[in-house]
Image (cartoon, rainbow, N blue to C red):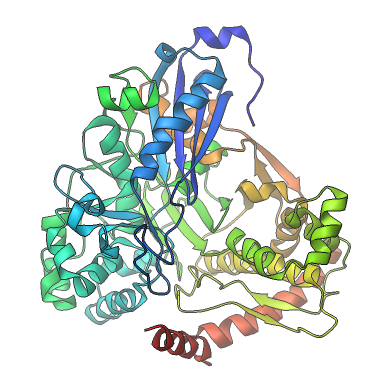
Length: 559
């Protein structure tokens, strides 16, 4: 939501933040003095997510998720000028632009940054396209990467909770090598799109410390060794030196100056500061004012990321990464996450919302989610008699296994759509509690939750999270948390603030303790959570491999 502003805003320096999400990009114009959001705009990706076929009709196997890089440039062409126009801010007032991206979202390019999928002879090759964060078809490669690291006792593995994800840089690159060696051979740079978009803005390629640390296994100044990569696959031996290694800049650094071409796209002045890239979840923490240890930011959307800084460096099982200064300099930045949250709710509405419910919702002026939420909100805890596992897109933390799948237990002929919907809401809250308990068992305290993202609009969901986790739950003050965080880092890069802590104190916003846990409901949820954990461990820790077997059967049938 755009904040009211007065005429003085037209006399003050501003920054632009651009958040590249899963389905669209959002731009926000922010006043440097106080973080006021003066204008916002959103532009959907024309090609959305390619999970069934390429633009030319080439079919894709299960678990693939690709994107088209030109869609990101279209965000710069449309959302940025539109946000600027709505803000009433003159272009010459803008001193910097910052960006953030979903991660790990990676792209094979030539040395000049040209995406391989834009080469005429590679438009029908799936591995030439952007691999979106939720591309999970590299699970087999991820398991081998983990197994070899365990066998060799690689020190960096503990920084990732002992498991490497199929969503990350090395697993996805190894999949390209093993499934399309020609595309791998023609890849001159294996680039996080968070860095590629900055490259397009300023003409300079620089890797950001955030994605390098969390998604590129870059720890203590080094990637996995050549010996390790050779043992993994001899053809992968030179992956780091030939395709990945590049100068790394810290968060809030200046990457370069806006080029004339990018100025024409955006309507911003040529030569302004372009900030080093960042990950959407991590950049949200300072936007929510969470720059002290123990304040966990839960960024909800199609998936959920759990981001927290701590003064403790501990091994937390199933973490997506522990990086020195990965969120705020001087603290250890932790990342965990759930691969499906909003996506699960959306899936249920698409597949489990009958026509009679659609008619009722329309008569009441509600969309499907509002209608199901209202009906689910009338229930007492446990009334529906269901327990669900939130693994419809696999499990990111703490199991790190994207071959797991969703489950609902307790269905009867009396079960209604709102019952299942509420059980799915609760399942995502149970998944978050599982992550919190992993932190605390490892000696990393979680004192408070702050929720950001589109799902903060669902008051029932927010209260469920407070009750299930037994913690006060705050809500970020901005509807565009990642874009605001990117803008704040841009302000630091331009020299308007000495560091992101100072920017967070002035430009960040949030409502602490907006939801408080109810003791009676929390006690009822403790009983349900105990059942969730039984199912979680039974299906997720090897006692019953039925989910993996079903994956193999589906793959064979789809071949």
